[in-house]
Length: 117
Image 1 (cartoon, rainbow, N blue to C red):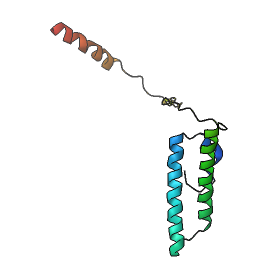
Image 2: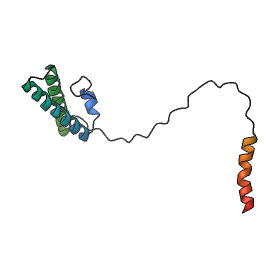
Image 3: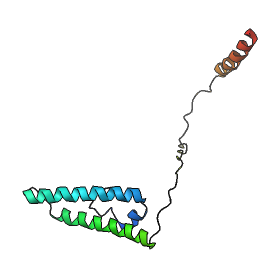
Image 4: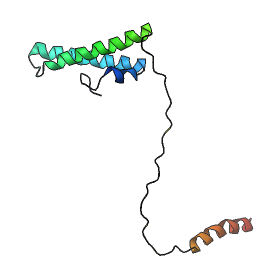
């Protein structure tokens, strides 16, 4: 997610845990510092970026404060089990029938080892 963009909406911030919000706040403050430094040295190309980052910081602070006051609910950490991909449905190519000889040999091999014991 890019700091200072339209992707950082309050709805998206609601899904973040407190630790992630703190991390996003730290990144935004660091970016604001760098932008101010660039502005002071005359190297800043997009001045609108300063405004966007300031707004992102304000959004994060608002979410944190609303959680403290109980206005917004803190998201519950949910463990997500890995989702197994469903087998792809493909057309089977018409091929010659598979010989059963390799399977027969595979089943005889463990018996042979048991007889040797």
